[in-house]
Image 1 (cartoon, rainbow, N blue to C red):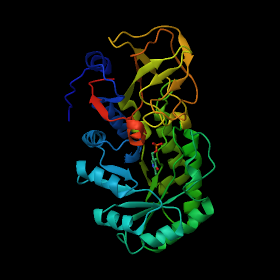
Image 2 (image 1 turned 120 degrees about the vertical axis):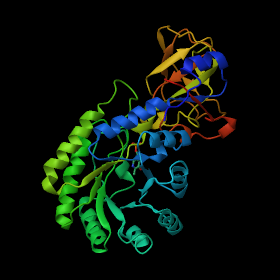
Image 3 (image 1 turned 180 degrees about the vertical axis):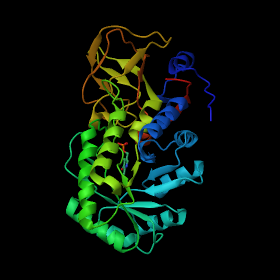
Image 4 (image 1 turned 30 degrees about the vertical axis):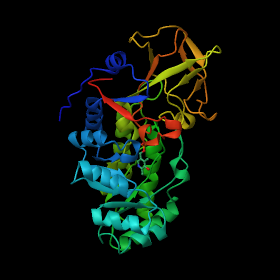
Length: 376
Ligand SMILES: *Cc1c(COP(=O)(O)O)cnc(C)c1O
């Protein structure tokens, strides 16, 4: 599928339309290229973690690029996926589900379910297909990510082995999964998990059908582009080394790294104070929420309303969001050009993940518009 993009790039749109609300620019070609790079490089099945950006145009372009399986966490995400791809394979990998949610998933034919608790396995038993895949989620104290996902979900190796044995005894298809954390650039984090997964399977006496190595692949937030190829190679080599002939098929479920580069966020300077601080039309209640948790992105271009780039020497500026709440302020000043003026735009690259879906309507602000461009 080729997308007709009415605008060549964000600058062309900004200078013609001078939008006064914060908005996202989306490049379908960029998204499809990333999906193809994942599928060419990852040694297994590439699925997409819908929560990172559940937009219909995202899902449709991933399907167009050949993605057929999705990591979903709720009935609403299942419906979003199926509405753009009726044949999509659903992996229901939120380890905690209500009984009514399980019934929806079973009705929709979800194929795979992760668990980290015996009671959750009991809830699934008898309600989903008797040979469905159940993946036991392992958690280890592994560093390398921006924040630790093991703090909420997953069990240690001993408990994982017990669960895996029961999964196999009940006739389900036994698999395992883990998630190294988010914005993880270190291949060693995956390797550490893979080694323990092999030990867990061995001690349980269970041959794993599949190993889902999660998401967490770092996106290009700051500095240089992370080397995903090195992570893919390390995952493939470690699985071959520790499992040998028993190697399970591999699955990954990137969210952030799949979608981040496909969108840029444009925010406008509403006011420039004498102190040099600025008020912009988006903040921590909108698309900039994650800055509090994982730091600010550093690829920011400032454009005057006529499209001219501001080139003044960078100046650390306090950045306030648009709402009347004093929390609505970025935690650290951003280095922004000295010649920045009211009415300018900050064009922030790599903002496709965890922006639109986390944006609220608080005080009447929030991210509502997505403009399609040929390139970012
Ligand atoms: C959030 C999540 C992902 C995606 O994580 P990213 O850091 O966005 O890649 C994948 N799998 C599960 C189970 C998740 O909860």
